[in-house]
Length: 404
Image (cartoon, rainbow, N blue to C red; front, top):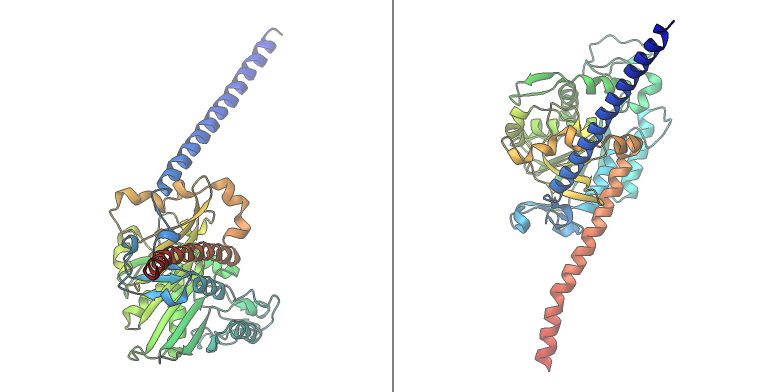
């Protein structure tokens, strides 16, 4: 009988030790997390803020590619933020513009009307999905349609969501044939399977290792869109690509392949795109992109940091919180061997789990990115007006002095 209290006391002590160990581990993890956050906030202060980078403008006349922009050492690129916000919004039209639509034609009519209402007068092709995406020889059940070699057949009641991309084309007053490819983001379960197919495969055309799922998706899209594009020999024809999430990674791969095939690819924009290439290949792949290659990311959006072992490409417009307030940073592409920049791509350093989970349903979506870009545009426009006012004051003073 006397052994019972002793056994109970021993069990209680063991239980308390477990609680104490758990408390110590939790405290250590919290302290480490706090230290990492403070360290990261300090590193963010060393980055260049987007509105003072000289890259972004709120004036359309200043946008484009130039060799005269030397502000802060960022030579060659001007991006009009209002145009950028509209471009990002256009990438989000597929699968959302007509909730419950039963046909691709219904989607096409609505997307075309959106463009007309917003001043786009060119033509538009939304990929028709009542035909096989690329292989007409596949035997298909009458109630299903083939979605490609890496996805399951798509039931007819989901066809309205299955557009892969749309092509906008317009003949500009200066004779330019502008062609813009917009790649749809993750919508269906089949798209999720594409995203998690993260094994690295070697692509002979680009000579690099790429994410298997994204590469397969990009190749399928490329085979489909090529007959719709003006020939690469037409020097008046230009190509731009833009995509969100899965579509952002696909847009980058498509842009590289088109450029390598001789097409005049002028610009590519990825929004919240996951990673798709290895560290060893980033420098070689970056050279295959057009000079104006921009990826837009939010530090509360976990998708751009996945898969953790892969890398993204292009200059970065990064919406991040430095511990005091939300800011936008411009981060030029950093190649291999930049020892001081390793943290920029680190999932551990940049993932703020509580905040990310809280905003999970909003930060990855197109409206969130559009709102932040428009807010940045308002800040840049205010600074541009202030700068013009300051530059005009000495002239006014000089004129008044001369008249006196």
